[in-house]
Image 1 (cartoon, rainbow, N blue to C red):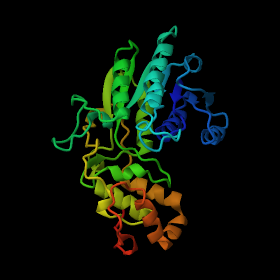
Image 2 (image 1 turned 60 degrees about the horizontal axis):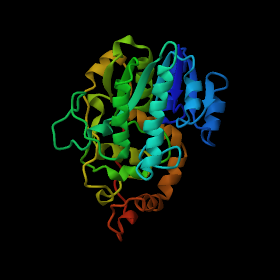
Image 3 (image 1 turned 90 degrees about the vertical axis):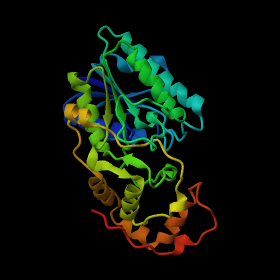
Image 4 (image 1 turned 120 degrees about the horizontal axis):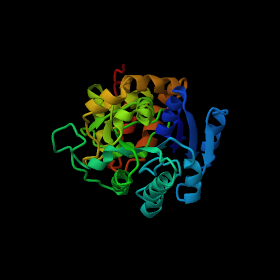
Length: 334
């Protein structure tokens, strides 16, 4: 099939692209031409078509949509670690022009095709808002109560996709962390006792690729998470990741106490239809270890300085403290 993949060089985009190519599809990658994206595009070596463009420009979008059977729309400005270098919460009007306006441009271009393509839209569990006070899991019938511009943009786009008249599928993703050495300052925004569901980025990529071709998911909203074995409180995830990196667990005081918009999900339907849950947090930890390689020993050698540098990025830590010079026992990882 001919598949347009927007945001092809982001975290989920890279995983989805890998799986779509593996399944034998002809993929057109639509993304901004940036210093980070150009090397990623060069590595494809002709295995996928590259269509550089801007979602805010209807002409760019129309050209990209031309001749496609499916549009997988992943491109979105996110709250933290945006590839653009600008966060949705700091420049909401700019982000809305890309997120909502760009999605509308995708819809308009698809509607104008002689045979309108199906549309797979990526959403987020952020749309549920703060739900720690109610029993889990979240389901597709739970009300949305978005907090922040990013989540409100997602809700608005979901509504536009549903009303588009196109054959559509909406996927709401759980926490899918990139396999990289870059730690997001947003890690401190989640309370350590907050429920959170992990899903491996490669499993999300598989879910996206399968959703692009399955007729069983047309007109459905599905929750994409790692399943019961990937349901944690946040402390369990951050301890294992930081220990794997050689840093060790950071002090509780560095983390927010305000409930965060993550939760456990009912993924029974999505797993039945898409068969994507193959990996867990242990797999992620092992892959992170491979990425770190010998650098983990270097991190361990200068551990106090690394810990200090990380916690300086927390807006919640009550300075001054001497905790960073204290050694803490390592956490056993699997």
